Length: 162
Image (cartoon, rainbow, N blue to C red; front, side, top):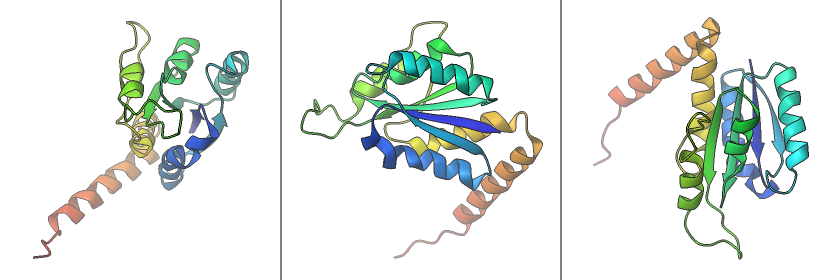
């Protein structure tokens, strides 16, 4: 079970680490890459092909602004790609709060889909990757069912503080 995590800027490390944390929680191997679709296109293509040849089964890709990275990767591979639209917070950002990235990732052309989670929700990308892999790996499916049972138990035991 292996997942590749791509993101376009080192400044997105903390945001995308949330996906890695979920994968670690479920015992899923991962490798992370900081590669821009715009600044390192040839290297990105080579790295995606390398990831395929090394047996990775799902790709998580986070990007902000134009958020081309998930779509570019989906155009290179037939592996499932989960896009994480990211809010760009910098002096040069356009202040759209990640809506630009969300629309870029979710509005892929026909035949080249990217599964998309909420703005900045790399954690859900990790859970979705685990669910995809659980189709093939019964032990992971069991872990996910136990995790969901614990969520339900916690919800049933929740008490109001007032």
